[in-house]
Amino acid sequence: MNKLKLGFLASHGGSNMQAIIDGCKSGSINAIPVVVISNNSNSMALERARKEGIPAYHISQKKYPDPDLLDYAIIKILENHQVDLVILAGYMKKLGTKVIQRFKGRILNIHPALLPKYGGEGMYGHFVHEAVLKNKEKESGCTVHIVDELYDHGRILGQAKVPVFTDDTPETLATRVLEQEHKLYPEIIGNIASGKIVI
Image 1: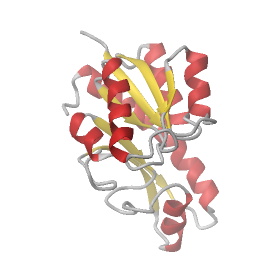
Image 2: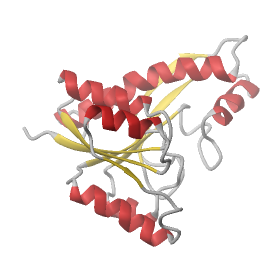
Image 3: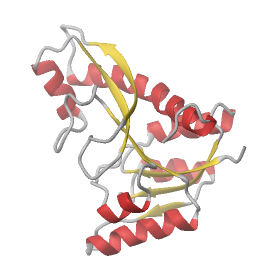
């Protein structure tokens, strides 16, 4: 069975990306990371890619102020590396419509809450965890979903739950959720690569 070719878009640390790369290296995911794109030239994600010997590109609005040209630049890189599955790993920009249409149904994202709760525009990072705590939720977690034109909206492929404690801060909750992200994201991609999940 051919290995899935994974293309990553990341903005900052890229720890989820690293968890997936590690899964590919260990053989638990029948896939190969082929390219990393970041909109942040100083991102740890680009550094991780270079350490792993994965082609890495900085593509941002500074280089491509025209949104269409930005989309085309991203599409060209993904196509040149024959990417099968596009993985958003902390990518802090809304993907352009042209990218979404070109890879329709083959773009994944992980969100640090149990969608459909706490999704949508402006719901990212600590804002999500602050909202969860403010509403006194008993549990939170993370969700892997297919990306479509709406924020945090596409088909849900899997979720992992964590308890919310009364003394939690956004930081402690974020740490607990991230631990689950590092397990869930590689697991879902592994299941896609093996055919257990059909997208």
